[in-house]
Amino acid sequence: MKKLLVTLFVLGIFFLNSCRNENEEELYPCASVSVSFTIDVEPILVGNCNPCHYSGPASGDPSPSFETYADFKSVASDASSNLLCRINHENGCEPWMPLGGDKLPDSNITTIEAWISQCYPP
Image: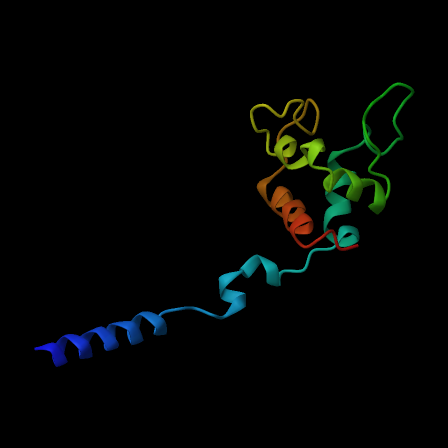
């Protein structure tokens, strides 16, 4: 009886280990999709963040500029900007962006999130 229990235990360990998935592309499918600022993110910003962030902040306007890669990277990498919270229209992150507009499409938000998670590639 003990031999049967030991055999079942060993087989159970073997089968549990064989079910692990170590293929990184399957575990992290988003990491395999390359996102760049110039090709993917900048068109979203130009199409949705004008005129507040591209025309250059007016005198006394606190809106940060998104005119360059460095400008937007500094905002995206600053946790106090609440960028993702604002574009996702989450409670407590007002004012929501785009200011006075509808929430960005989920695909645009996902692109910005991927760009941030990939360490802001140019």
